[in-house]
Length: 116
Image 1: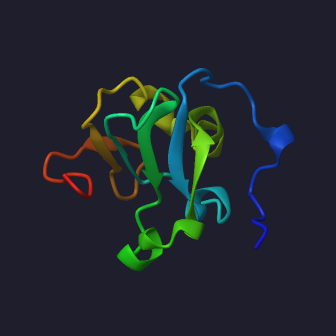
Image 2: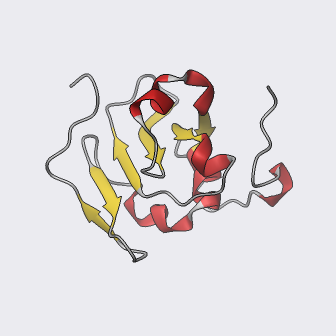
């Protein structure tokens, strides 16, 4: 199945280049929802930034289906939601969620990535 992305390739601007790749869900890139939950793991390889971006509405079944996720350049996801940019230098094991009803993120201390 071919995905219909919310942003076209020519709409992607250089906001924060050179940060490597990340995982993001189709709820962000296809449905156009904002990032409401993000965490950074230790990178899987030299190209991986360690960042994982979700809108926060994804169920476990949704996340378990690899067709709902893809690898993107971090700059691409920053174009979908520039409010993530100030957090991109956070170290591995950082977790943030958007404060409901605002544009601000807060640090999450009581969550660990799957498999930890």
